[in-house]
Image (cartoon, rainbow, N blue to C red; front, side):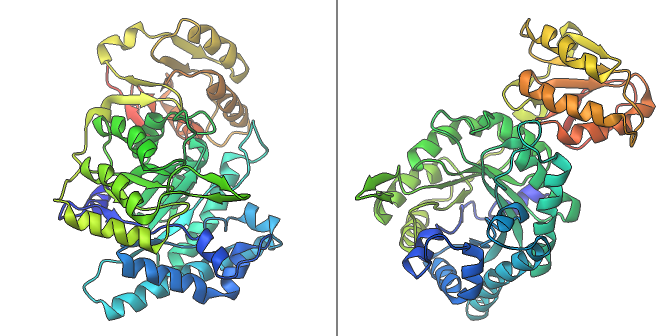
Amino acid sequence: MAHTNRLIRNDGTPWLLDGATGTWLQSHGLPPGVSLERWVLDHPQVLADLQRAYLEAGSQIIYTFTFGANRPKLLRHGYQPDEAAACNKALADISCQVRDRYLGGHPGATVLVAGDLAPTGEFLAPAGTMSFSQLVEVYSEQVSALVKSGVDLFVIETMFDLAQTRAALIAIRQQCQLPVIASMTLEPHGHTLSGDRADCCLLTLAALSADAFGFNCSQGPDELADWLRPLLRISPLPLLAKPNAGRPVQIEGQTVFPMDPQAFASRMEQLAEIGIACLGGCCGTGPEHIRQMRMMIDRQPPIPMPLSDRSEMMICSARQTWTVDPAKISTLPLIEVRQADEWVDDMMEAADNDPPAIICELSGLPDNGSPDLDDWFDTLLELQLMVHQPLIFTCPDPSAWAALRSLLTIYNGKAGITGHQAPEISGTLRITC
């Protein structure tokens, strides 16, 4: 069975996810300024009670409390580097035990645990100091621990940067083929904080074998519905919405999310009606919000979301898409790159004419594994911050395809591949002219 099919319900109804965790912990004794992960491990029953309440309210997927349990974040809270794996497994064990106990009393229920990966708080080079490979290693550490704990799927959530989301997805796929939900958080203008467009995120992550895509946090149900509707036309994946309980407001110095459970479920109905396949709640939601959503879903006739094949011939950068027309490939600018340090100037000149895509013929690409390949990695990282057009790559020397495959692990989009003996490369579109 294809991975995407595992996140489409046979009866056409949406998956019901859980709601928020932080506000519940705060109301049950979590003091300010402490490590959330350490406090939960010291008080596991508080989390277990919440997750049990979500299941009793109707949730079918609960998230492990590993949102902030990546190594860079844990180090800021006093953990040692070698403690990250054990922390992740211990946290995931709580949720897996809740699942197993609940199924013991409800043998016919559908209950899954999603291993939760989230932002590290670090920035990738050249904006920051962390390399892409280092970030993949950080997420791999979490993935290994969560797989050992027995999670059923993964969720990469509240991501504001497509490149970091790619790193988390690659880390998962290097270790397992469990289903993966990729969920971004958008700014009010509808792009991520890093400037990534929503449709570009969808195309990129679908090409890397994500199983569902959507948005969480960000805003309330109405805003997420506005962002998701355009994606229905092109999405090859089931879509997800896990919004906040409305836009936050400040009341007596406290951040309050204004939608009560009934109002929230009422506004979520529009998402169920257009076939969004995974629904849940983020900041400001609790078990009663989920219970009201369960009642809303149960009143609805099943409305399965039709998946689209329109994206099959689309490529993208993080900021621009192009539907490939093989007949027009010959009209695109072709940049022959013999040395990495010549690449940026030539590309900037080609981009000035605003073509729909640019072809890069990497004639000087060094052997895979060569130290000289590092210069090409650095140049591509710099280049994709400046050039918004999608890129199509080709190598005149067939022996260079292995090096190109390595180079494209950091390409922040869905690239095209063309040329003699062009191989299949994960995350790209092979174009035959």
